[in-house]
Length: 275
Length: 140
Image 1 (spheres, rainbow over the protein chains, first blue to last red):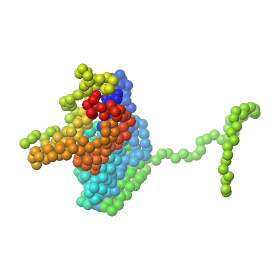
Image 2: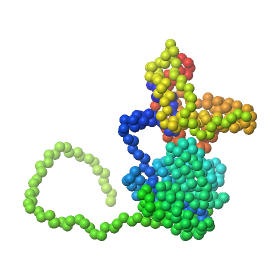
Image 3: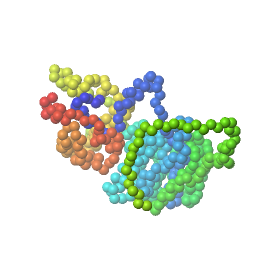
Image 4: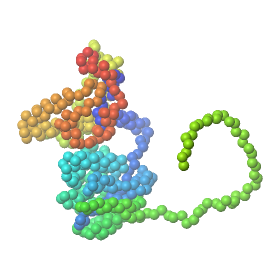
């Protein structure tokens, strides 16, 4: 608690000052504003040369679509990207934090970062906050040891698998993957399968929608294709529906002069224009 | 073998609440404000306790591990270095860089929520420097 004259320097990090007040409000029946979630479908797939990540682009706030075209595939490092589901702010800040930490690590070691390092950093951070940071992530990248794909859950557990799906549309997408996945697929085949999985999520889950974003990571380069497929196009207007001028008949016209009163005159010097 | 403390962040635990002492054993309201143990004790959020003691607990765990693998000398030396580093700082009321403690603990190679949210360097409140020095000198 802040004392009057002998103030101690506060610690950094999260401040829990308002929790007491919020609890008091809850007891009185005043509801807190809800977080902006990304009810989502995110998927990842390991193919012959690397990793393909896919995501939809809808962000919801309870039952209203908050963002029709948000970007869910976040940059972690040049060879590692991460898709995020859960509370939008949490995924955004978590991925940015891990990206900074990984960059510092890279500058210290002088080597390209490994996907398992990013995984370990994420895992340790999420476990520290015991699931209160609601970020479910699909982490994929290619490093010196090959392509790797991890799924990270909000409480800090991770899985290393050849294909993963997360988010509210994960079941729909997983069904498509289970049917179509083969080890060592070609690039076009892998992209098509990812697109189909996200489309399954988009059309069968309320929380996912709009377009499909795809990110292909290989040893040499990253292809961030946004949008890969516009699955939901808004209807095009056929013509102009405005009323023509003169549709409403004019009955009477009266022109009046409004007398203005000069209140103030200011004279200002203007520099010469040399044109 | 010394048993290791728990890895999992604990939501509750015993903490010592120290109310400031003043003349006649009663805290001085002018300097410290109105104090209540209950306010300082209450942790509403399950993470509050674990965050407050995070660095302490991590260090306890590391020291237990070092004691078991390398012997008692290692944690003693590290603690000594840490104590020395903590004495190197600016006068009270001002923010010090803590360069040596950061290097010893590894914080100079790491970026965390503590560097972004509520950074003590950007604090908007500052105590009265003269009174803080008086307290440090034991005159208050």
